[in-house]
Amino acid sequence: MSELDEIWYDYVSVHRWTDNIKGRILLAIPDIYGSANMAIIYFKDLRQDMVLSLYDGQTTDERLKAVSGICNLNWFTRVWTATEYIRSSQVMSMDGEGNVCSKWKDPIFLRKMLQVWFEEAQKHKSIHHLETRAGIGKDLVPWNLGPLLDMGKAKSSVFGLAFGLLSKRRCRSNYGFLHALLGLVEPTSDRPLDHEFEHNYKRIARLCLAVGDYSPLLMTPRLEKHNMPQQWEIKQGLNDVGVWPLGAQRQLPYYHQDFSFRNGDLETGDPVLKLQLIGVVSQAHGRLEADPIVEFAHEASIVLDATGPDLDSFIDTLGCRLYDERFDFIKQKLAAANQSAQLAGVLQERCNKELGNSWLIEGPGGARWVAEIMTLSLTNPGRKRGEPVSRMAFIGAHGDTIHAGPTGGNHLVSISCTACHRLFVFRAGLFEPSSDVVGSIA
Image: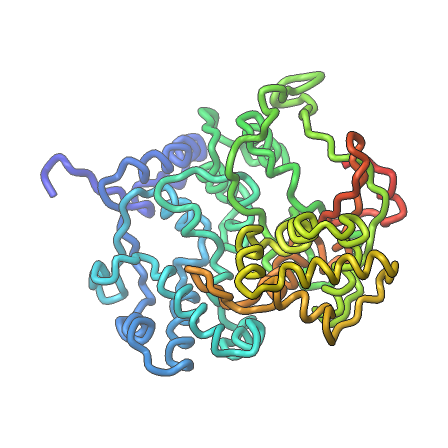
């Protein structure tokens, strides 16, 4: 360091006793961290033996103890530490004894914790067995910490992702929460926030809408009327169990140039969006709440009813749209096993015999066979980057939650295209009775 270098230490540098001064400092914090040569994280409760066990532990219990120990560090519980880490371009960390943890080049250890978690998950019957062994509920596990890595390296984030991350952390006041939120999202504001939470919360959301971040409109609404269990009560729409937060935005909405506020300005107007029309909802199919393979058979029948025996359409809908697998990956695996023609034959036979929803589970052409040859029930079926669970298991957990499964709202909807009149099947989280959804515009 030279005489011209400046050290910023939040506890000392932020004037905490005058709201006007404090508000303007809080607005500047994202730029202060973004322009810093180095941000240093001080993990007061981190011990060297925890780090060594994480990297060099020999047993599952030793590694899991290290993972939960680091996940439970006080630093991970605060909203401002998340904002400051994400806005910083260069980060180092120190343990509680003042040792700089530069050796591992992973300042918050999250990459290594995720690696250990994935490796251990493959040794267990399911991810839920691993979570139980790790003491989830009493201790945190890596996914509880939120998408810190996806949002790092001084990048701005979408409103929904930022809100979901900060909602899991502690904050002294709503005022501080809003400033931390504003520090993560794309829009900037030259006006300090006041203490009216609802007004400022909506103002930040409107700032995001104006720059093409539509996630405020996609967040799960209040759920009071859905008889949620006590521990799932949600104040503003996101929760780490009952609702899965939205992911990162990949590109601007296609028609954003037509966005406007009607009957007012950013502060008071109604947001008006131009959206692509899919069609009219013709049916809403509820989940069976059964064994995953029985649920899969039910969904495969619904898809086949929409696509007919066309193999590519069936794979694209069931494998890609509903189970998030790549089309070319499924096709490659079918070709390598010489099973493309066999699957096409099964689809044709079911259509010819009009077998409806009675798709058998076992045997030749059964649902279990279909799931396996499409790789949907297999764990890590030859990808370059391994995954700890199958696509079926992942969608059964993540997909069910993000589509309002805990409220009973997870449905498949069949939508009739108004242009070609074909049926298309989508997953949807419904917050109204399915009978009210039929006939609505998608």
